[in-house]
Amino acid sequence: MEKQDSNRSLSFIDTPTAANAGFLERGRRIKMAAEMGLVESSRGRHWSRALRSRLLRRKGNGACGCKEEGLAPCKVAEDLVGEDGDDEVIEIERRVRALQKLVPGGEDLAMDQLFEETADYIEALQGQVNVMRALAGLLDGLEKEKRLMGG
Amino acid sequence: MEPTRSSGAGSGNSGTYTPEIEESLRFEEEIQSLMRDNTMHPSLEPPPASGGGGGSSSFTALLGLPANQAVELLHQPDSDDSPAVAAAATSGRELWRFRLRDPKALTLPSGFSPTFPSNAALVERAARLSVFAAEDSPEAASVPSHSGDRFPKPKAEPADSDSQPICPIPGERPQRPAKRKEAEKGNKVKGAAKKTKSAEEGSAKGAEENTAGEKLPYVHVRARRGQATDSHSLAERARREKISARMKLLQELVPGCSKISGTALVLDEIINHVQSLQRQVELLSMRLAAVHPRIDFSGLDSFLSAECGRVSVGNGRGGGGMEQSAWTEATDESRRQPQQQIWHVDLVHPHQTPSVWERVDSPHLFVHPGTSLFGYDPANSVSLHSNQLKTEL
Image: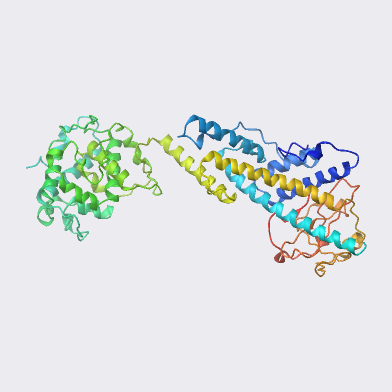
C-alpha cells in the first residue's frame, strides 16, 4: 500500500521494525485520513472519485458503493503538439503519462481534462498541506504546553 | 460599355447555376454599373438608406457600411444608381470593368473556373466580406492604384508585399469561412494575404464585397496564413487552444512556472510540484503521527457529552481547554464510534487550541460524529474546502 499512492516513499516506511510499527501504522492511517479529507473537500471531481474508490478499496470494499470506472485507454498527447516534431511529442507524451500516474484517476483522462483535474488537484493538495501543517504546529504547541504544565 | 445587365456575366455559366450564383452575378452587375459611372471615394459617409445606393458612391463606401445597408443599397433598382452615385476612381473602375467584362477569360493562376459550385460562390462572398470588412481604408487606397493591365496580380503591390498569389489551395478556401472565430487575431498580413487570394480566385465575382460585413449566421474562423482550413484542422486547432489555455492556468498555479517556456519543461515543473505536494502530505502525516505517540484525552467523554460549542481558550493554554468545531456533514456510520471525532482546524485563529482524539486501539482514525455534538459557526472559520481531515471507515 505504501507505493500505491506515491511514487516515492520515505524509506523507513519500507522497513518496519517492532519499535516503529505502531508509529508507521498510525502514520499511514493519518495519511489515509488526510487523503479522505482531500476527497471530501473536492467531491465532484474526477480525481476525487478515483481517490475515494482507491482508498475504500484499500480498506476493504464494504463501504464502497461506487461504480467501477472502466479503465479507458490512455489518451495520448498528440493534441498538444500536433505541429511539433516527433521528438517533442515523445517527450511531452512521457511527461503526460507521468502526470496521469500522479493524479488519481488520470489514466482515463485526455489531455485537456487531465490538465483541468491537475489544476484542481494541486489546489486541493496545497490546501491539505496547509491544514496539516497548521495542525501539526498547533499540536506541537499543545504538546509543549502539556509538557510544561507537567501534563 | 459593359455587358448587358441581363445575363451578360451569366452567360459563361455552364456548370451549376444556382440561385446563389445568380445573385452574386447580379451583384456583379450592379457593382459594374456603379463603377462605370462613379468615382471612387475612399472615405465616404453616404446617407445609408438613400435610394439606389444614394450617397454611397463606390464599393469602398459600401465596404464601410454595415452589411445590411450595403446589401440593401445594391439591391436597389439600378436606375437610380448612376446619377446619384459618385464615380469610382478611374483605375479602379478600369480594373473592375476589366474583370467584369471578361469573366471567362479570367485565368487565375490556379485555373480557377468562374463557374463555381454553389458553395464556393457563397464561400467566396463570405471570404471577401471578411477581408473587406476588416480593412476598408487600406483597400480603398490600394484599389485605385491598380490598373487593369495588372489584372493577373491585381493586388500584388498594396501594403503587403509578402502576399503572393497563394492559390495552391483554392479548394480549401471555399471551406475556410465556414467558421470564423472572432477571437482569432486577424492581422493585416493575414487579411492581406487572404485579400490577395480572394482577389485572384474570385475576381470575377465583383459582388463579393457587397456582403462586406454581413455576418453569416455561423461562427467564422479566420485561418492563419498557410494553415489548413478544413473542418478537421479547425476543430483540432480549437482543441489545441483549449489545451494551451489549461496549460497556462497550470502555469499560474505552479510557482515559478510562468517564466518557463516550452511545454515539456512546464510539464516537468507541474509534475515536480504535484510530487512535492504529495510528499509533503506524507511527511506531515508522519509528523502528526509522531507528535502524539500515545493519544489519550482524559476529558474526552465529558467533552463529548457536554455538547458544548466553541470553547475558546486563551492563546497557548493547553490542558483542559479544548476548542474544536465540527464539520456539519453528517455520516451515520460514525455514530458507532463515539470516541472518534472530527476536528476542524480553524485557520483563522491558529492559536486556539484544537483537540484531536485518537484511540490507539481502534482501527479508525477520525470519524465524523453526529453533527449535534459540536456547535459550529461556519461563518467564523475559513472556509477552505480542505479544512477538515476525516475519514470514513
